[in-house]
Amino acid sequence: MKRILAQIVLLSVALLTVSCGKDYISPDELFKNEAKIAKTKISVKSEDGGVVKETVPFNRVTVYKTSDFSSQSWLSAWSGGKMSYNMFSLSIYFQDIEKMKVGETLKPSHVMFSLPASSDSRDYTDEYSGKITLADKGEDYVILDFHKVGFSIGKGDYLVDGYLHCKLEDKLELDYYDLLH
Image (cartoon, rainbow, N blue to C red):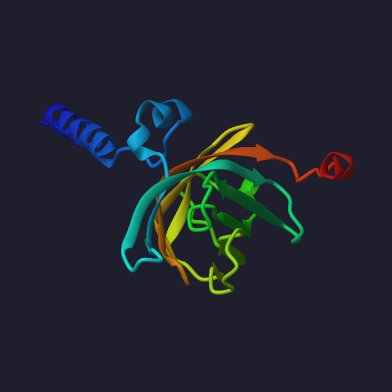
């Protein structure tokens, strides 16, 4: 009887482990399934009154371990758009990335989503909906899981959903000589 009970317990633990799945995704898994990569779904009103719907990925994304704010890390992300409505930036300051564990939710202290090429002052917000969790991290990368993170601005609604692979660097290093030339 004890032997049967022990086998049932082992089988239950094995099934429980498999059914829970994993809360992280590796870079290899992410690049194999492009459908999981975070893209920004845009719904904006066009000048002729219609609605422009487009999906744009971020093309430059970096998480800096240290930032302007003490004990805070910084996410800097830019799209590769060419029009004022699809050229956007996202900046998030949050708790120290080095102390975070996989599966933990980011707790932003400062958020900014904007359209830098727009002349409309309403195309900026520091408010968002949804949540972001740490899906995986390594020596030189971080993967963030955006769970329907939405931003509403003057031009329309922007929704980021999926996994965002980010380079991980110590801090932002600006070479002023390169900026001037």
